[in-house]
Each structure stands twice: as C-alpha cells, then as structure tokens.
Length: 176
Image (cartoon, rainbow, N blue to C red):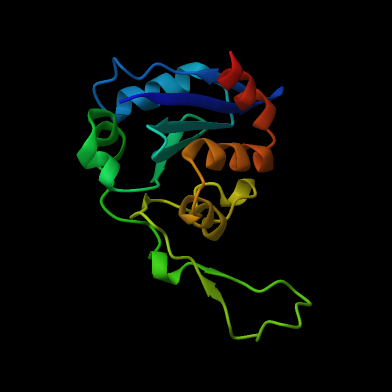
C-alpha cells in the first residue's frame, strides 16, 4: 500500500513541512513521536497521511501533547497495517456525522433560517472532524471535502493546507 505522509508544523517562524517515513512505527505513539520530532517547539503539529488515493488521516498535536485523530473512512483500519496503526484505537467520531450541519450564509435570501444542509459522507469518517476548526477548517467543511465525489485525499490535503497557510510547503514536498 503506497502512502504519502507530510508533517506540517507551525512554530515561531510560521509553517514548515517535512515528509515522514512511517514504515518503522509500531504504534500510534511512535507516529506521534515522529511528528513531535519534526519540530519539538511547534505550537501546532499536523500530520496528513494519504493512502492509495483512497484514505486520508489527519493527526494533530498542540505543543507536543493532546493527540487528536481524524480518518476519512474507518475501512482504512481494516484494509492495511498503516490504517490499523493510525485508526485502530479510534472507535467512533467525536461528533455524530448526522449532527454536523452547514449553517446558511448570512444574507442568503434563498435559504430558510431553520434549514441546514447535512453532510452525507461516502465513507465512514472516524475520530475528531473538528480538529482543525480553530485553524479555519470547521468539521462540516472537512467532512464535506472528504465526501465530495471525485476528491482524492491529496485534493483534500491541498484544500485544507491552503486554508491553513501551509499549502505551498506541502506542495513542494509532493514535487520533490
């Protein structure tokens, strides 16, 4: 199973990105240690793992602590060693997917005030879809990107990273 694993870390100098090799990691804590090693003093450390143009996992550490994980599809855990490593301990979404709604834009005359659009994911997302909300990507947006037909994990990572401000750094890793 092929994969791309990129750490995006935000320190005092801004965002930097590093590609990580997860092949020797034995458990999720070793993956978290690799992420910490990317920049031990980072305020925010993110790991984007894309596998076989099908699955996406995002991990987050704040100041090296409080590991949070989101996976685009729980099937990844059953289909590969890497998926089991990253998502094996993630049992259910932190938010019920049916409860994640998109609020209508202010001033949108076509929308009824009580009406909201529900995200209907193609896969079975697991973990914490709200892990990037304070960085500008709320749960409903992340779930919508993962559920959007034709969007590959690389596309989702690119969209998210542009919002975060580290899009160029991640794209440079891809091209290297």
